[in-house]
Picture 1 (spheres, rainbow, N blue to C red):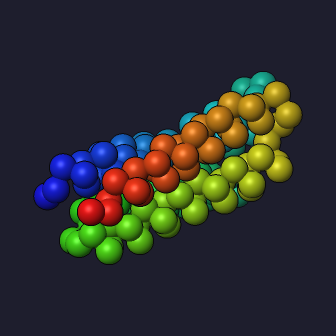
Picture 2 (cartoon, helix red, strand yellow; picture 1 turned 90 degrees about the vertical axis):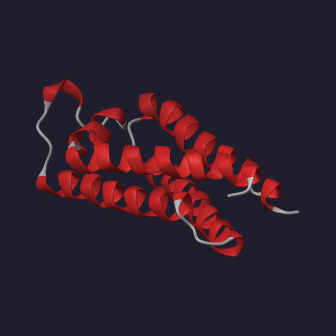
Length: 123
């Protein structure tokens, strides 16, 4: 493995770890986004959303971490950035206003961090 691949692959492992956590504890995502304020219990739809994001992040993270070639790594990185940007739009439009800055900082920050590793893949 080339040294220039280390950072995006590390981001992949971190994403997969977060995905597994979210899959195991989907309400954590809902609380972070402000959907479960005031001690409310998650709905079945909310839990399904958390699990779906957990699966997506686990799979995309593993694809990024274990991509077998540089073109596959670039593709996995582009997919990961697209996931984070879509989260910025989806969550940014629906989370309670007081949670929006935190949600946008995390989603846009992670998208930017992953995207910043892309030029390093070129020789």
